[in-house]
Image 1 (cartoon, rainbow, N blue to C red):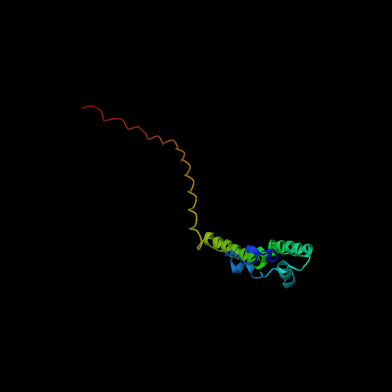
Image 2: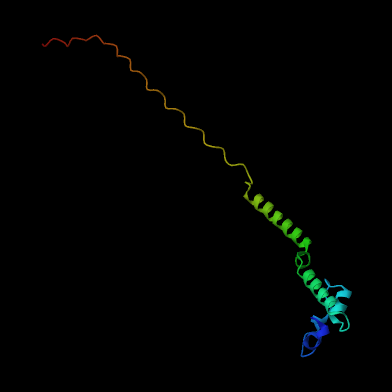
Length: 122
């Protein structure tokens, strides 16, 4: 708020008192320039711009340590998933390949048996 302009920006009309407290990203000098009715308007305007720029800087809106923490958590999650996917024991051995079928035996010609003549008729 530009408290120097009075009205709601100076806490009137039910404006929240918390909004009139100096934020961490503003310096005492900047905050004093926003409140002083005696300071040159150009200096108050410059202080307002500086406060807005500082409030919108990435360092202020998203702390670097939080990025580091998120990266570490992501790494931990990846490691846990990797451990879950690794087999816990050796897989069973593969079944041995079936033995090749024996080659069919070559048939040797049967020995000729001498023919026995049938007995003569009576």
